[in-house]
View 1 (cartoon, rainbow, N blue to C red):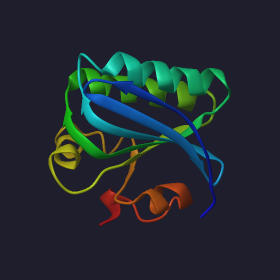
View 2: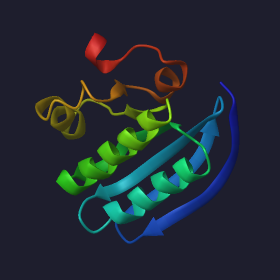
View 3: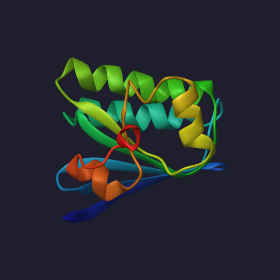
View 4: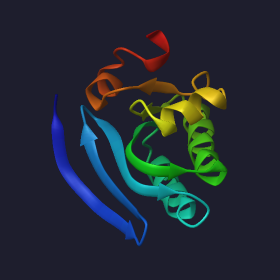
Length: 130
């Protein structure tokens, strides 16, 4: 797997976004809470990637402790933008609360969801395939 150099890291009190590239795909590793207070920063980072022409994105939620409806809205908005340009947003989520939330809300049908970053980068084994 080709991990390229790191881009800036965005920090808020309850959120950290580390952006880097894996196999030519922008990866957003999000740590902390993705909620009403922090979702504007995530939305801005994802919109910025779209404005640069990056429409294939991976959002790694394996370090997220809390995710609410505004956080889900930021992800759904990014998916809509990506799809408009022939891209997609892939989600990485481990077993637990976040993955359960994606299942309950039906978002496993909206996003390609993977258990590992390597699978997301290679479009490998999806969570829904298990």
